[in-house]
Amino acid sequence: MIREDVREEAEIIRHSGEIPEVAFWNSIYYLTSDEEGPLLKLTSQEIRHLKKAVVERYLIIIERDLTVENIGKSFYRGVSRAMVNWERLSSFARREGFSQEALRQQVIEKFRRFLREISSNSLKIDVPSGKLASWLRKRLACSPQILS
Image (tube, rainbow, N blue to C red; front, side, top):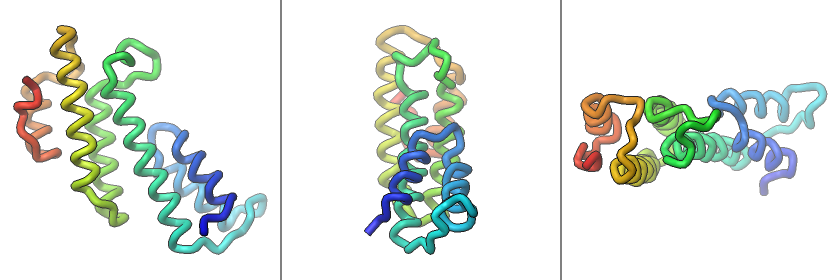
């Protein structure tokens, strides 16, 4: 059972800024050590729930930066930021025991959809195609054919 205080903190993580792991550690501190917090002893299930919120936030951020409709908006950070956030998510997932393969497949699909839309709308991205192709091959272990 996940207590309400933990659920609320997971929601805060899901809506946090650019580095969800910072929000995670702030939540852990608030829930367990902050004199103004509930001073809980978190169960492994509750900690996992908070970590899952970190993964979800990273996916939200990556989706934001791989959505054509967001290009030109103040919150859009570009493909280069999606690449950085995949690295962060991948590292976090590896450390915390989340399935990297499942996450990798989700991110590949986000890239595939984004690049298809970019191509069909003759838009440019903030990363040279050669660099992106190399990154896709090395970091997502996928064929750069998704670029075409």
